[in-house]
Length: 556
Image (tube, rainbow, N blue to C red; front, side, top):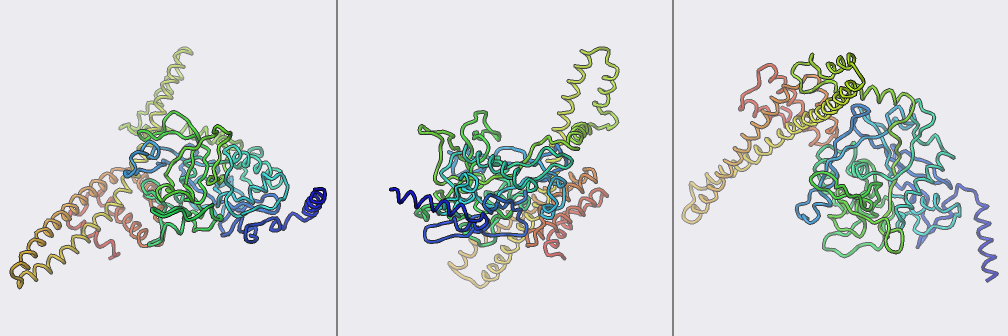
């Protein structure tokens, strides 16, 4: 026993004498060693934001950009998923209305990060590129022991929510003490900085669906981020295929599958991930009032295909009968965020934004008669404090109502334009299917001239069905065209500057170089021309408009 103790002490002394940089020496995996790159950033990219960790390790983050039109503006979101096949889970997964913003402006980001920031009106947070690995966990939570780490490149699991929160606290403190410049600092504020924490459910799901790289359809309607044509889901997720036995006994190494469009790995499957939020049921498009356990997202290597969708919501307990709850397939990925009310110029900017909010009185027909301005005049002449208090209460109520109206107006404007752009594709799809069926019908009609007996009877039956199909396709074209014209006329009634800003914002969603995005950009330009024609009273007749729509697909 004494000999073994002496040997262990000698090993620890020798280990402690080694320099901090070669952390590889402390890595051990069944079957051989792995490198620190395997356990920290197996797929380095020029757009990575890499923060240091103890022992010469690192953690890679990706910049997540949230559209913003101002400090008090937030983006509408619909976390969850609508799965008619699993109606028994409706109160778990049903999409609900939420909103998302971020704490950092472009000016708050370190200079070297700004090259990764997309152009446009955005605020930012950062999401870890991978699930926290066992080696990274050891570097923060191992109290400097430097002990070998088994399966170092796999996600850390079997930890409680409280331990994950403790990791984010310790890592933030280490960064502040050893690499303070690695964190975002608010412009003009020497006191407040960014910090590491668990993501909210909305932050996690926005990033998992592709963040700023995903269009509104992927964010608001689809169940998964856009996969390349023909790409199997198994290329992007470690999970249990439907009808198959479990293919893994443990999580795979971080980054073992392909990344999502934002450059994040393992947001589907591998290890399920913890959110900061308490779990609430989704009822009637909103979250229920009862806060339970914490939210678990993304599914794991034990999950079936339906369970790894970004919108899937699960509840995990903070405690079980034997203590803090943990699971062998549950890990986490942190984000870097900050406070909403830093110092510097932000307080005055927030005050200005609030003062300007709701001032436009969006539903007033006579812009010169703004009730808020009239109330301000009454306030100035208020005879006593009680009258002033009542007028202030009324003013705030009107202002908040105006803000809601402005937000609704913005959402309706964006919805109008997006619907019109998609409707152009619908019209072309109907026309393409009608033309294909018409070609088959014409061929059958020619064949019927020489057919006899049962063959002729069969042809006539098929032709009858085809005639019904042609009629349905034509009805679809006519209705879709009428719907599109209505949207064009609605857009023509918008303020010109508002229309152009909304269209420019929409075009950001179709920046890709693939055929779909090219067609959507062409659709947006055609919509602009039709809106301009409608304003001038020269909107083409249905036949001419249909011809323009069908020609625009090919760029003629």
